[in-house]
Image (cartoon, rainbow, N blue to C red; front, top):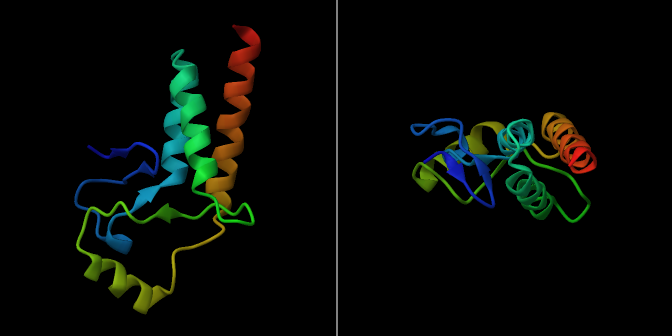
Length: 110
């Protein structure tokens, strides 16, 4: 399964980029979708998951490792080539805000 509850959503099963970590922005997309189909409880849980994966200063990374889909050597390779995982990632922050707004709006409607 590509949904790693509590961490994010993996891009695809064979992902080796930074060992295939779980992406917070994809989890936020899932939460936004959940609000659209009436699953506001899971959407609210997803927001909490994203918040727990923020850094101490509130920054949201591109992806979270662990969990990893690929061997840790893939993570080590990408750190050597590109550096550490992008943090903060504006796209992660933007999707978090969109989802938070959708959850709040859904709560007002119900």
